[in-house]
Amino acid sequence: MDANELYDPEFRKLIKSKKSTIIIPVGSIEQHGAHLPITTDSDIVTEIASRLAKKCGFIVFPTISYGLSFEHEPLSSISIRDVDYRSFLDDILWSLGKMSVNLSSVIILNGHHGNLEALKKLPTYLKKHFAPHEGMPKCYSYWHFMKHEFDHAGFVETSLMLAISDKVKMKKAKKGLITKGLSEKEKKRINKLSTQPGGFPKVAKNGVWGDPTGATKKDGEKFLAEIVRNLAKECQS
Image (cartoon, rainbow, N blue to C red):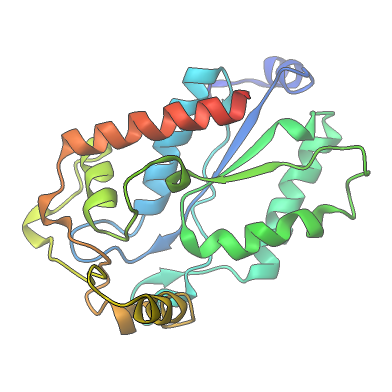
């Protein structure tokens, strides 16, 4: 159920139910090569959250479309500082708490790798508002729920976008950084550099990690089904 379909009386009733689970999708605004829109991370996580909510009877909130993307500078990246990002999420969760929602039933669904460190710090940050007996919101990154190796604007993300959007410009899709065949030492060096401010374009000059040229809508639908199926199992366990 999407929050934009709810009105005050029913929302207040739902949110006080112990059976109610809320999903807060978080994404980013950043470059995804020349063939995918800068809203790609937010578009994908919004779709996954919507499908998960329908499958499990959860309530999905509007996506937080801004994240931490400093690693993509000087390419397109609109970023929020780590402390401000956590404070923003803290305020949302605090507001939900005031409405007597069971906070252990809040899922933060992440769609951008650059948000990971801030989200890992979130439980410590939230302790000032949570009593020891209260459950912390759960944070999941959707790509952890698929078997295929993930990428950035490569085969996986491009396939996912083909399945949910008509904004993909496949004629502009070009192969980017390929790590297959590299030594483990070189892979570690690249991974570390790519997460530092301005580091991503240094390892993937065209902003693409992977090869999007073989991406298909069919593959995207398979990935979506796999992710939602595995997420549903995890959330309902």
